[in-house]
Image 1 (cartoon, one colour):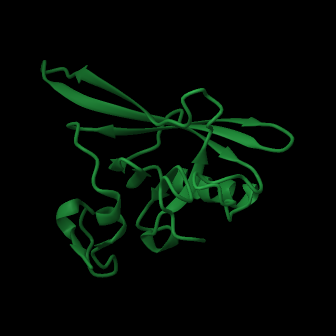
Image 2 (tube, rainbow, N blue to C red):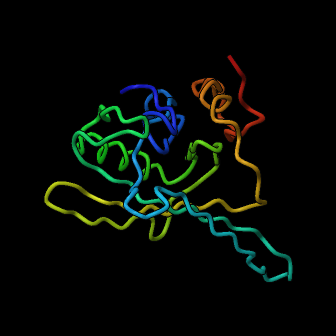
Length: 170
C-alpha cells in the first residue's frame, strides 16, 4: 500500500497500531455532494447518574469503494475496491484504538461500536457510511504529520494502555 496523505492520494486515512505496522491506510470519500467530501462531527453531552456530564463525539463519513477511482490530486487510487473494502473491515473490526486522519488533523482514540457502518452495494462501486465515536473531553485534532511519524511503545514489552503519553517520536 502507498503512503496515505489526506488531501493528496486520499481524502481520509485510518490508522491502528496493530494494522499495517501502524501506518495509515487511505480511503476516498463520497464527493457527489455539491460541496464535496466531508467528515461530519456530532458532539453531545450525556448526563450521568450523579448529575455530571460526559462528552461524546461521533464522527461520520461515507467511503466510496471502486476500481480506478480518482484521488484528490487527480491521480488514480492504487488500491482496488476489494482491497479497500478488506482494509476498511480490518480497521472497523478492531473496534477501539482507531485514528481518523484528515487534511485538517487526526482524531485519535476512536472506537466503532453499536451500529458503526451501513453499506450500499452498486454494480460498480460500494458506499460505506461509517460512524466512529470518542467518549471524553473534546480535543483539537493532532497534526497529521506528527501522528504519522509517531511510534507506539513496543507492544511486546509494554502491556499498559496505549495513549499519547506512552509514545515516542522518530
